[in-house]
Image 1: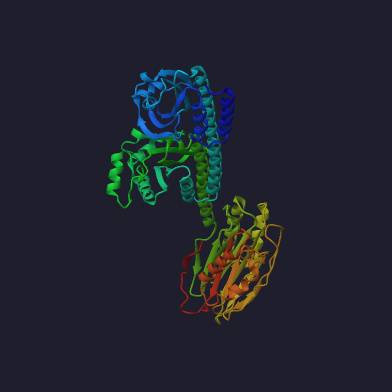
Image 2: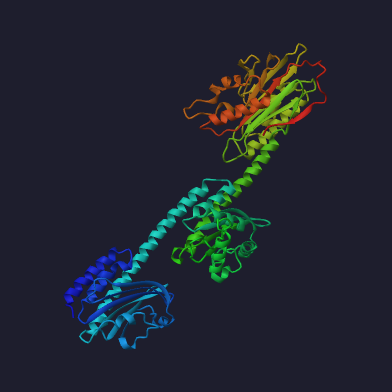
Length: 618
């Protein structure tokens, strides 16, 4: 037989090739040629089997031939099941004449060669299948030596296959880790519940599966939120299934709080919209030639069996929903349960954060709404409006407040203020300050006294925060003008937009509220004429800062002047939105209160009694 040195060199080359190979089939030339050069060997033949009896591949090379005979198939050979090896390779000697074609597809090829004996080594590659490598030999062969060489070649093949699988698993883990990291980044970047759910579905397709459906758990049961698929037509079908299919609804209901991911395929999908039979596929293709409504279990041209998985989305000890994946790919490309659990955990936390944010947002907005007046008084004398813009993305309750009240003498009092900081304590002081000032002003208390008494109340309550405020009373005069009386406690000065477009500042000042005992506040008086507009605001408006560092305060007079001739509602909303668009930094709330004097004197017939109420802008 061939020299041992020649075989040793060939075996060394085989190990080198195995270390570089990305597929076991790449070793064929390095395996077959040295074996065929062995004395007495006339044919080398290898087979690959799956599911015990499914012949996937056969390759044979005969002595004197330049090219192998290769057969790729999916033929079932039931009698071959008895050849399936255990965990260890098995070497067998069989006379060629004794081979049964029913269980030995190699028999036909062996009979064409001079060999009288088939020496074959069967071995397991992985859990899905097994393989064999054999040679046809004549009487001149050293069969024991041939068996040794077969065993050595099989060792290399198994090691190569194991290494390929290991590298594949490592690559898959790396890809999975990258996908999970990207998924977390994408899902955590939104605090909107439905957008987060849609992102969960989009991230998974097609990297994880061909299709995905996401449901949110509500008190009345699963609520469909999002679906996606690599095919636009099948995405529409998935959306319909997610909303209306009773089979899927029942499955999700049965899953309940089960934390394990479940995979369903074959008969388990009978009666479902994912049932995967050739007849159903053909019927779907025939009845939906344009693709609309195509069944997700039967992708056009893709005959892989459909598999679905359902993962429960659980966060902080409670179920928030579920994600259903639809697969139309080989079994080897299905994700692991561990990966799906990790993805589900991350998705659930992102969804739960969005749900908690949504609850908090509703609670904060509800509380903020109760801290501001729901209505403002208005007469033919005054056009009143307000605007409020929440600036904190975390939605802590802000400390800005405003109000407008009628007074016993027929005048109107405007008030606006800002409590230092945010949160529950700021909200408590906001409510105290607004209601205290409102009550005093409704009783006819002058602005300076009202601020002094609020300061005394804050000191008595040992308030840990200070606040700023400004109070302005607007009293009509017989000549058609109105007297503007203003007191400020450390608050930004109001602006007056005159009917001719000029803008002036109401100059007044005073100490912050809640800092010292026994503080008095001086009033400033001036007249305004018909169509003049008074604008009160908090520092969230003036301190909105652009990227270059300039404050909106520097351009506020110009922006206000450009609004000459507009009503109070337009002025309030326009200034708020302009400051918001201008702002590159700063997260303070913006509150505005705008009053335009119509010029109607108190004795005119147009004065309506009682006063009407209009809703304020929120």
